[in-house]
Image (cartoon, rainbow, N blue to C red; front, side, top):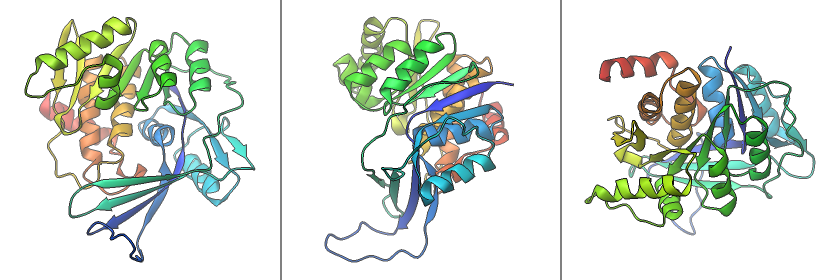
Length: 301
């Protein structure tokens, strides 16, 4: 059975649907909310576990009700939680997502005392695939160095020097457009497609051993295969909530690579999974089934 480790930030997420932007100075009551697992490591871990990969999540959670809720959900989807470390001094981070039904935009409020790093990175198995974000950069680096032959997927979203260093260690870096533009010191102009090629070439020149996937929002994702730079378009859907799309995309990419697929199939599976996720409101509840993803893939490719 394929084994995975997801290391990084896990939050308790509260999703609130609003019909219009909140007015400054107003008092607002919400009678309907959705709560569940959030954060990059949490969402990716839930994706991989639901898709049949034996998944362990490594993170720090508070000794509080939200930490308990997260642990219970991990147990429900059969995630190995032995590597979760408790903190008795800090609360479990909370993410409040405001989902505007009218504009289709999402606003995220992350509430945490400070990010607590794992004290140790001691795993008793060799993972086939590793997924890390930039929040716990020290232990992410340790994990990537300990298992250099494992497939590794980095969420390169945080524009920090620590994440830039992690890019050198990861097999695949999935970058946001903002991160890629900062790392390459070049802006993308979608009216001039040569800027996409130039940006990718600059990234490869700077990070020779790393494969890059650059997410471009509604325009899809850019990657390189057989020395050809390509863009796979996003899935055409009526999106209602896209806040989990990035994590779902990266998880589908990691799943495909772990199962022997190439980077092109991984990006296509990622775009499909992200698109399907965007048709529902919420976090881990929006994760599409593997059957749904494969059906759309077979219909389109």
